[in-house]
Amino acid sequence: MPDYVEVILRTFGAFFMLLITTRILGKQALTQMTYFDFVVTITMGAIAANLAFNTYVKVHHLFLSFCILVGITFLSAYISLKSKKARKFFAGDPTIVIQNGKILEHNMRKMRYTLDYLNQELREKNVFDIEEVLFAILEINGTLTILKKPQYRTVTRKDLWIATTPEQRLSVELIMDGKIMDRNLQENQITHSWLEDELKKRNLHVHDVTYAVLGANGLLYIDTYDDHLQSPIDQE
Image 1 (spheres, rainbow, N blue to C red):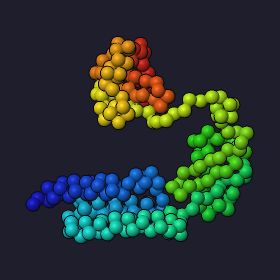
Image 2: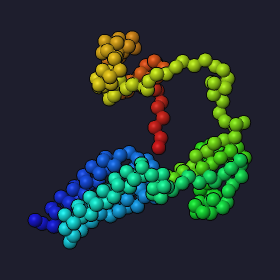
Image 3: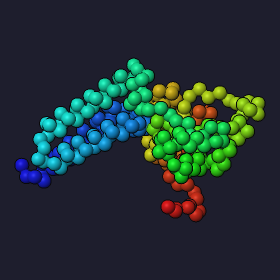
Image 4: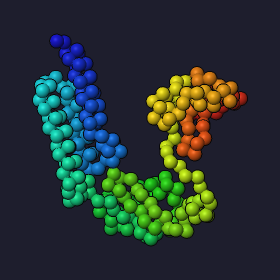
């Protein structure tokens, strides 16, 4: 077999192996990158890269190594479910970096977390005055969670004693890219005739609609291919 053909086949194999493994491990591996997840991700990437182009290493050796790593990941996840100490060992603990408007320098030094990073995270959460913060916690996946002092929190309808309409479900996508989402209609007991009637009220056909969603409040949102905008903004 020519070398370039082998590289092509190995590259496809590495890609699908990573894809399948990511699907098996679940979404947590993507959204919550702990210390352990970071190590596993780097190692998997290295194995997959060698599988793709390092023709001097036998495929079954790399596949065996990859399977062992996946097994270790599953075993650690199982142990973490059973033991709080194991979770702490593999993932670490959240760290408080601000308490009652005061920066905890000792905790920040322990985490090698700089003031520049802290200020950036605060600004991204629309906090420009540290005095507003009651607690800021550096989570195990590296994100910063903020609890503002009561006087700086956003006012809710409950605070103002304003009546609200209960919402019993999530929004339901009815049409996407000009095609009716039959499964969504069936699962939510929505008939085609009702949807067609709603479109007729707006002088629309299904193929005119880019996106249609029934909100949790019961209102139907429809976006069409023709937005009827005289001067649409098109800037990057």
